[in-house]
Length: 328
Image 1 (tube, rainbow, N blue to C red):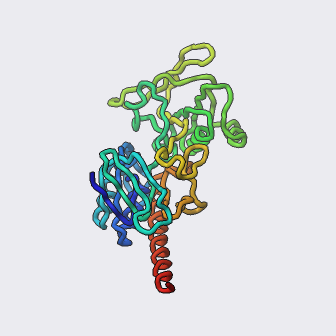
Image 2 (cartoon, rainbow, N blue to C red):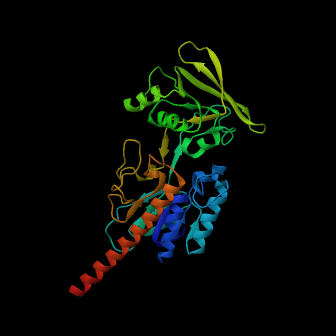
Image 3 (cartoon, rainbow, N blue to C red):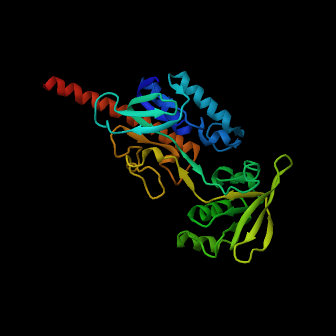
């Protein structure tokens, strides 16, 4: 068992965690990034990325994360592959290594500050064809992938706020959007429903559940979805070029239950406009605290904010300690 210590401990290695690492390293904090089960985050399973600033052409998600990691390491970040199994935040307010995390293999990670960038995962249906056609017609992010379906027919699966917002957004690109819902009424806010029903580009298919995504991942990708009527049991199919699963996201916050405040969806609560949690020295950035935007660029921005705030926290604490020593 090895104990690793740092002025800035970062849990998570997506755009938020690596951006925090870059800024933290440039400030001389010698950050440690514990990469987790999916080093690089969700972008490592995203093929085409067309909306990250600075690139004229479509780039690949895994390549972008490799470049971010290389930059973080170049400026002084230590990247460690491990999965955190427990976190102890009870040392908050103390000088020195106040925050402690334990990895799957028994290694201990201690930091004077802690940046949480564990992200969130889209919830999937778990039906045949979903995994095979992921990135080939099946997506969980309209704002990420809707652009690729300009002028094409798409479907959105779900009935809550996320599904309705995704359907409305997709009308910016598609003239034919179908919302598929397993019940006979939506769970979304009324104002969103009013906008949905008033949009001539959107139709709603009620009482239908998706049983299978149709198509060949090696020959053109998604071609349609197979449905079952939840009332009659009748089978049917809808032809489509794109399918967006919009049944919510699950933030990776299990480690922090009982230690940090969360909203009803499990997202970490922060001071508005900042990455600051209720515990001084602990910061949350990226999708783990953002249930609205969930974009790589916004995650990177909040990662930058977390590092800058961590640097200020340490500087203010050191100034206060020096002042107290002089006064004493």
